[in-house]
Image 1: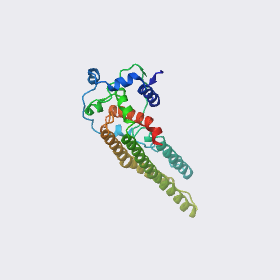
Image 2: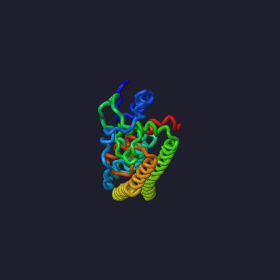
Image 3: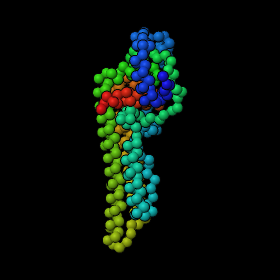
Length: 272
């Protein structure tokens, strides 16, 4: 059996499938919890206070515009360019369809998964599951993916996240369209009186655009995205998914995103 990197969901999923068909796995899943597995579970701690900067790292927010109104043609060109960038930024964000459930996934190199690793018992007390490591979560995940209620919830979560992402993308695009139209109106008025749009007017349009986009990201996107993550954490907690509970702590969310990615990798073919 080839080794798999624990940060590679496809590799881990393949390894799980191989392990589940082995006699050793059957014996392991039937065995009682060992004291070693219990000792590896850390005590539960209260989540850290919500951090705006930390949460912002998970948001599907396009890069902040850096435009200059040096000319009408230049401003229109940049608005068109940033509109395209905006759409691509949303589409490039990890979504449920790529197993992130609202979490931005940043792969970190890790040592290959040892095929001989001793997995913990797949059914520890539910209160302990939030503190399991990714490795310790694997046996439980392999069981959860056969649960119809889990499959149904994941599909519903994907649907809801897709709807939110599409709505935010459309709302943001409307802002770009609004300011493209403002530039075109100013250009039309200037032509009617035989002149050009003044630099002052272009600068005012540019500044207003930047201000509205920043306000949209801060007051609309960030709260909506953080609310989505919290709801997903609650829903997965109710299904006793390992590592899941409502938290904004970066390390806790890192474990959660690994579990979420593996869950969808395993459930993907079933969700079609």
